[in-house]
Length: 240
Picture 1 (cartoon, helix red, strand yellow):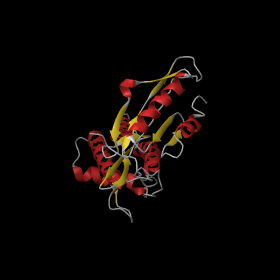
Picture 2 (cartoon, helix red, strand yellow; picture 1 turned 180 degrees about the horizontal axis):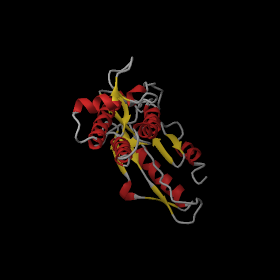
Picture 3 (cartoon, rainbow, N blue to C red; picture 1 turned 120 degrees about the vertical axis):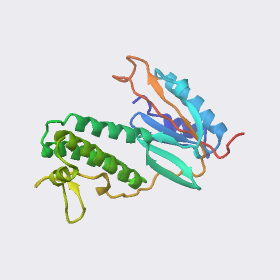
Picture 4 (tube, rainbow, N blue to C red; picture 1 turned 60 degrees about the horizontal axis):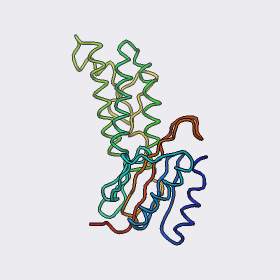
């Protein structure tokens, strides 16, 4: 791949320094122990990419302190009271809300079981992806949002019926939860049904600066389609 060799390049130019490269497909981040080192990494990688037909988008490049936070792969990373806090990003949350809303809006004439069948893998898949970070509060808020969407969906189907009648038709009590959106055979997944399972992430304590970068591939070079490349660099001292 076009990005292969980048880690070796950084190690050769910054021996003994706290410079680390983390890649995920064509997205990557770089951590550094000083702002000066971070900027040097930026220049070095820009040259590396240019030689391979890639360009950094300066308008999408910025340097931020780890205390200010940054988004990467659907998560927001930020230091809070001296500890690294990782949560689902606002963009990721907005995207799942829009997706669920779109499904429910398209289900005006669907049977309840068909709606549940369609929503369950979407809800479960999103929750599984975010279960390794601090997402419990987000899960609870999303459950509340989806529940209200479904109430409006049910009300539109039975506009001449009261709230109690609608609730009794679509929501039923189970052993583990009070009122759930279910049929006799299917139960809607809640985001909060997925338990949080924390994993160890890269330590950013010594690196307060993050340099976020995107690069856009020139058409027809190396890869079959345009891809974004993301980079984070950070350092130990915040400049005035």
